[in-house]
Length: 227
Image (cartoon, rainbow, N blue to C red):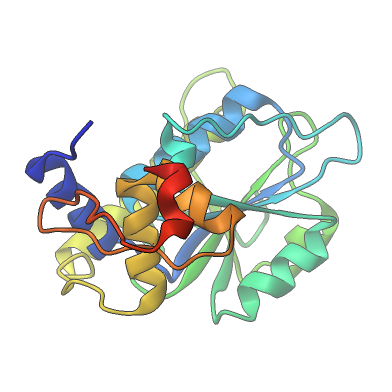
């Protein structure tokens, strides 16, 4: 099926507005519905990659379906929380942990225009001691009801919406079209997922696309199996 011009332009807009200095780290979150909801939120606010830590108890259950948000947000699974935190710190991100402590501040009082990773704890046990101690700040969401906390995916969505609001006001989403090779490859994967998979499987370079995102058929016979 040919790619529509409007859908291809939407792909380019989404790619242009991706916030590469903003991410989420899940500290042993394991329920599929919570992980899927956080990935959906990540896509909605422009986060290109989510970091997940394998749970000590139970299993990390997540099915990355091509038709959902998982197609547009990459996921990276780490063996432990320290590895995950070191990875995002290595990218220059502050660690903002959603957790109560004596030094915790309201999530609205935090500056999200600087590079950061939002660290979310497991459903039953919350954040690990390692994550609590490593965090640069602890964030809380004011509540007035009987419940003591929001669902982990709901809490992440509330905080990330505030982050997007601040970044929109500061012009973080007003970006030019990316021209680097990695972005061009990502655009091709979104526009032509089957051809991208074929090229990756056979170690072939991605062919060119026209202005509508449709494939310009390559003459090389190596591509015939996918045409």
